[in-house]
Length: 208
Image 1 (cartoon, rainbow, N blue to C red):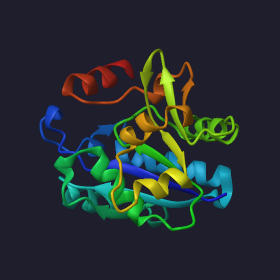
Image 2 (cartoon, helix red, strand yellow):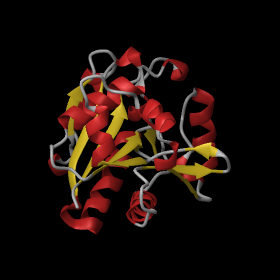
Image 3 (tube, rainbow, N blue to C red):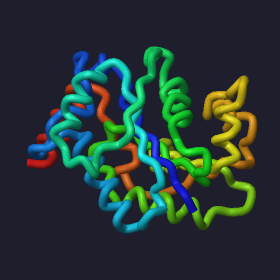
Image 4 (cartoon, helix red, strand yellow):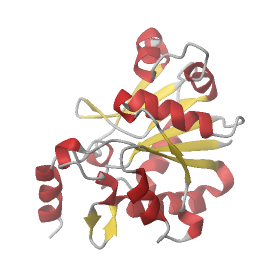
């Protein structure tokens, strides 16, 4: 089983004051560094199964590239640039998918502004997808009625998202509801994201 992982970090962070959210510091590390360390632990846990790791950049690419040079080289992912980041997540996801190896069996999509997500959370999602019912091609964490990340899908969906006239992932899901699993789980790590300065301040205060 070969798994590709797409990290989405192309947004402008306008509701956060126009800063790169993944560079916000928490307990002495950026959110991006924290996530990359968790993914490194996951790679060690699952061996060579994590085949590709692609970070999609956009509005703050230069700053994020500079930050990555300060991290251990073995943790640094392949970086690709979405030249049209204002087109939204669908555009960034497609940019990342194009950079994956052609032989991946499934794709794990993670937002970089999920500060509580750790290696065990991602591993649990991957284990659930591995035990999914026949016919399920997409899995979305579902926490108290709210969708979260990581979203996981198989190679069939990957191929359709890269087709000549590609749907977005939400469009594909709407067209194939029987192939989508909303994985119900009581874990706020999958949905606790950071959109505003108030969100981040509340997180910092909650950890001290």
